[in-house]
Length: 361
Ligand SMILES: [Zn+2]
Image (cartoon, rainbow, N blue to C red; front, side):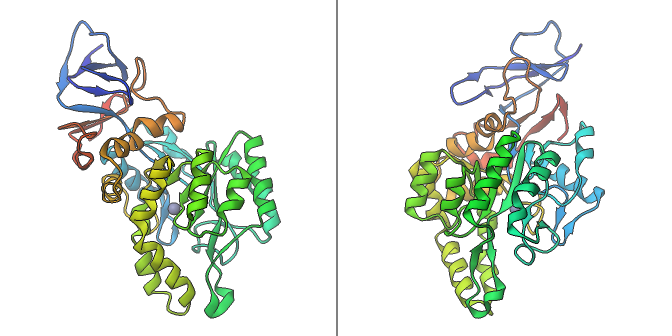
């Protein structure tokens, strides 16, 4: 069996950096094999993770298989080898049969209400009380995650239209209980302040965006150890969203305010001890393959380089239950010309991407 020499260093996790490693039979080993066929120079990291990346979703909803494939390839070539989709209208089960595409953790379909989310994205439940049963169905379709839309603009309020919760707190609590009973975790889209206490009371496992979390809620999120996907590429669009919402001045003002303080918000979350996750929110209006751009946004917010890199790689892999680069682990890895923990902008410049031990980019 031929072996590939990773000349290293190899960053395994927060504590361990190995001087070198080898890939044999698609797996990592730290025992020097008898014969080596080739080598790669550079800093090796466990494959990157995008925890909010909609494979199978485009600006108008579900996309065809060829488009979904090109989305997954764009993410892979950027070094993203593990994806949590955070909701997709498409059946992407076929991705699992493809050794050349990233590993995908599904969340089923986004759960929303009629007229209370982007059209053709989510599964729209006629009654809020339908949520717990729908959670059970999506948990069965997904890979251990369910995605709720917790708030969205309520246009029925006319000029007073603003972000409003989609679900009563007791329904949220039932829904999360159902998911946990089935062994699934729940993440929630939330821009607003209003649904956060109910989500935390319900025992939510993860928050997407969390742009509306106030100081007391940030402390609660930190105390509960609930990670937040910052999605700064998405929040960067809030100003443009506000500009298009002139019929809803209250909403537009709130979106503009959250846009203006987006870096402060992320820094406040970090300073409070909230684990931050990297999610590009690709697949709706944002292109795939932009994990390094999201990392760069976190740097602008003042998150230290080593924290950004750990969140983009081994730390979030472990949280999702995926292996890192221990002995015998699948060789899902990215090679960089320098140490990204010292300069996370290097994430934009992968020298090689190996998936299941094969060089794919
Ligand atoms: Zn999203």
